[in-house]
Amino acid sequence: MTSALLTDRYELTMLDAGLRDGTALRRSVFEVFTRRLPAGRRYGIVAGTGRFLEQLSRFRFGDDELAWLAEADVVGSETLDWLADYRFTGDIQGYREGEVFFPNSPLLVVESSFAEAVLLETLALSVFNYDSAVASAAARMVSAADGRPLAEMGSRRTGEWSAVAAARAAFIAGFGATSNMEAGRLWGVPTMGTAAHAFTLLHDSEEDAFRSQVDALGPGTTLLIDTYDIPKAVETAVRVAGPELGSVRIDSGDLPQLVAEVRAQLDSLGATGTRITVTNDLDEFTIAALRAAPVDSYGVGTSVVTGSGHPAASMVFKLVAHHDADGRWVSVGKKSAEKATVGGRKFPVRARRGGIASAEIVRVGSQEVGASERTLLVPLVTGGEIDPRWLGPEGVLAARSHREAAVGELPPAAFSLGRGEAIIPTRYEVV
Image 1 (tube, rainbow, N blue to C red):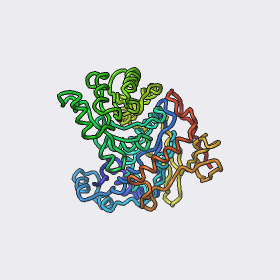
Image 2: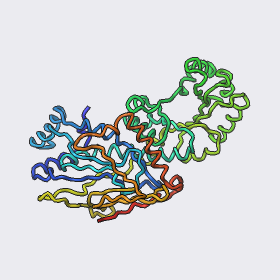
Image 3: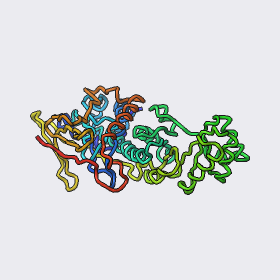
């Protein structure tokens, strides 16, 4: 399915006017970046790169799209002819998916004609804003969990395709699994899930429901124990499944107290290896509050798919340089109050001391890399050809691995949930 009309009208009207006056064919450089992190956040996680590249590969104007644009009188006939042959032929560099970002990090750099690049603004922002917001929130939950596994289970709290994107982004950020089956099929994210309260309510008794589930899935399954009375459910669960019961799940109540009581009861019944998972409207703060409790794993829904209160990463797509009428590069930037931008082609590096990140340095007009610095941009698209390393399930696994390494470079204070600024400063060096 084409992604060409996943855009805003003004991109097409700019294209139309620019083709008429000739400026749309000027070589141009656009950047994607965020001016600020959500209040209290110390860093962000780039996510969505593989999804954006998949959508770019399908960015075509077919007969149906062209006919609709003509009927709606959006652009003129010459522009329709140009769109009929549209293929992105330029270059795109970006931070690796899973990379850490900060305010003003140029995490995507698009170079092509103005015409080819401007049409990608909404597509790029819709993907990176949502996916990076989810990954950034999920990464905070991963650090709050302190090594205990998390599962994403928020599909019913967002749009159907946003749910797939959220599952992918959360996995990149360190979650271990998702309840979303399409994310498993498309992106290779491990899937999990057993039964909801409806399954217990369907049966004549809680014991009948537990026996049915154990018969189908084996004693290693996870039994949901808070439909009626938790102590009675724990006793029934162990009696039905035996001490080999894999896990019990609690989805309501005063979790710290309940978890402690359930752990003690399980141990008294000989089910010392049975794990406890909790799934009651969790976010990074409630997860952190459960660190002292004998919780073995967490399931997170609404909070992760909504970016824990920040469902977009405030990213923008801005023109920073273009050829003039004589083919010379000109740096351009806005001077608007509180929305000023720095013009020119950028080359970002991460400065480190003893392997720990100390600054984000964005060089303008220089590609110098110091001995203790790490280059951040990698080629994503060259001459219109997408680098396959970043695509599909393999790209997701590579992003997940890179996220772990990138987060490992951050100072310990980066993982504080208290209010604070970006953990390292971003500074420009203009040559």
